[in-house]
Image 1 (cartoon, rainbow, N blue to C red):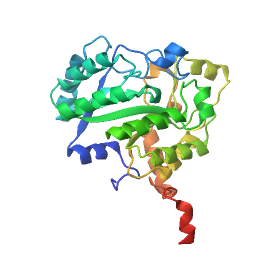
Image 2: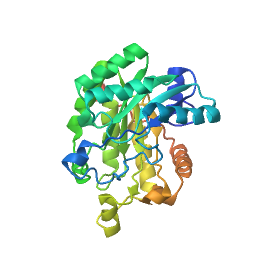
Image 3: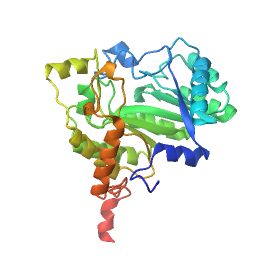
Image 4: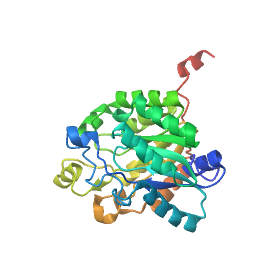
Length: 315
């Protein structure tokens, strides 16, 4: 772990893996989410999904990658890239269409990894076999990003997530069989959740041996059901101080070998009615680091609960 930070940053994880800086190139596909078909979708999700800064989904995949790559390469002198299928549910596609989009992505030079953002209930063996085929033929790493958000089943129901913890566990166990890496998205300040939920989420991710986590602070996008609840006063959000404490404790219970890709959400101001308590994400990061240092806090400080921990009392 980088000794200058009290957690294992994703940038260091990538350097350890590829021996140089690697950058994600986002891809936006013309698709949707099964939760929007069977219901109204997650209460926090805007019509545009989460790809606020992505290109138009009608632009071919290779063109999206090449344009973004040109910008990143010029600015950061990068030479290796991750094709990141970011917005909506990227395995909610007919299998052959999914395969065709992957083929476009690997046609772009210097793509060393494919990252697929999807839902736990959209993981199936035949899709994993296609990814395994691409990994073998094109020598790319595969990472699957799963949106869990919380281990609290009552909160998952409250936000109309459309799946429970069981589907997440099932997806992780399937993905592990193929040796792909897993990044899990969590939101630590959902309405109804508390510090105990943050701790349990860290424990579950550690027990399931995921490799990367993205912690998001809840933002409230305009024109969402969560926005209606927020403006009507039917939900309350925790304070900035409470969130920072939850995030600190979450990291303390998280396996120190799990890389941390994100700590706070980012959304254009014009698209949200609430985000990060009106504070920039980098200032929040500074406040978190100050808090952790003042408490002698670090990732994995309380990672002592697995492997038959109670039996240590007999030693």
